[in-house]
Image 1 (tube, one colour):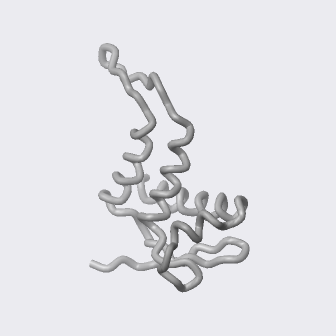
Image 2: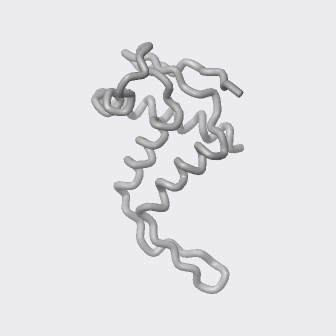
Image 3: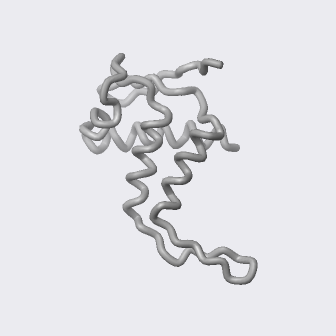
Length: 106
């Protein structure tokens, strides 16, 4: 089953992104959080004992890998090209991807 793609725009670029994240894609993105997190279970309550803030960048990269199909009409080196965007444009794209994934989780 092929998914519909939707446009996502920043100031200077247009991306074709998947219209929703599958359970597998969402799980892959969420697993990126666990790489830098140590969770202990005390009684019945899980407690985060360590969290590496650098993990957020890994999550952002995984969102791009899983959701972005093309950038400005090209599917080549998408992640690298996105990482070379100006910081404010990158942040805008990530916020839009995050909103898209969050909407589908509700």
